[in-house]
Amino acid sequence: MSADKIVRMANQIALFMETKPHAEGVAGLAGHINDFWEPRMRREFFALIDAGGAGFRPLVLEAAPSIRRPVAEPAS
Image 1 (cartoon, rainbow, N blue to C red):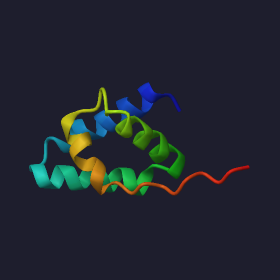
Image 2: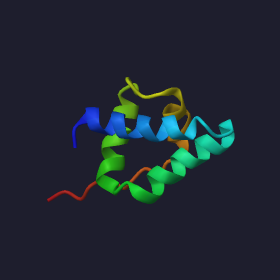
Image 3: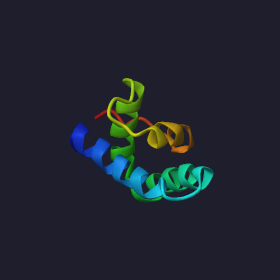
């Protein structure tokens, strides 16, 4: 999946969660990504976060520590 799509999807979730009380929004964003994004998507997400998080809304960056990092992809 492209980096642009990962950023866009995370930011769309953040836009919705920003309508909730702050703590609930942070938890909701992290919970949504934990529950619905497959490990490959979360791996790509964290590659972007680790590279500085450019393009992500502040709520995404704040929720990132509560998102589960997937284990490394097995070598083939």
